Image (tube, rainbow, N blue to C red):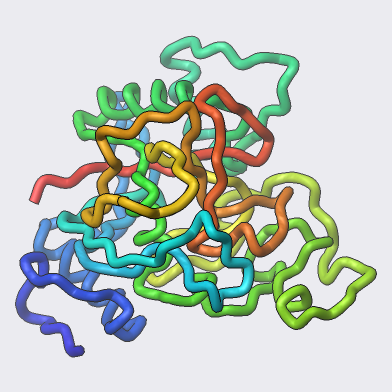
Length: 298
């Protein structure tokens, strides 16, 4: 399928897996052009500082979940189904960092518990609850005059895949050069049913700075590994009866929420695009953070 370089494609529905990688990137560029925006941008805070860097995500269709043939597949990723994202949106190129969260903390006098591990600088912010993430999003919305929120599970996976159908956005094999996972539990060796006795890479029992691993076709970094990321989606044990428009089911409530992406603490299989994990509303952890969505009027 060829995309025109002359006309915007916002009003057309593309099944992203039908597009080549350069066409997926072109669709992003055309969408940004149609919106009179840059494909990567930041909103200004009242202080004059830049907010989190964002990436434009075009509208389109994709297959959510995983096939039973994918190594690491879980019944919680069933059934694999089509989902259509009707409107473009912007999502953080990186998870929110300690520096990002510090701007909020200074402005609101948010209390950081001294008994918890706290990340620094460009490391993902950790040890915050979902309620704390929502407080940050409310603050960011007021600071910028734009609507910020968490991604739904469908939006997160759509953005992370960026048109791919493989286990990871770069293919079906992974090494620690691509993803920050627990080095004692690699993917390729387990997939091939090989025994291993030494880590394939040096163990690193902590988060890495954001942007340490390669970006996907839409410029998003670290969608696999490093830290699990909160979504706004209540946890269910499968994808049965999911909305097909990328939205959350409004009539379903649970004390558990979906997180995506895997982490430095987990096996490589959990960092696949389709992988998902349940977390409590008030849960906090050293391998749990979040990425923002900024709504776009179109």
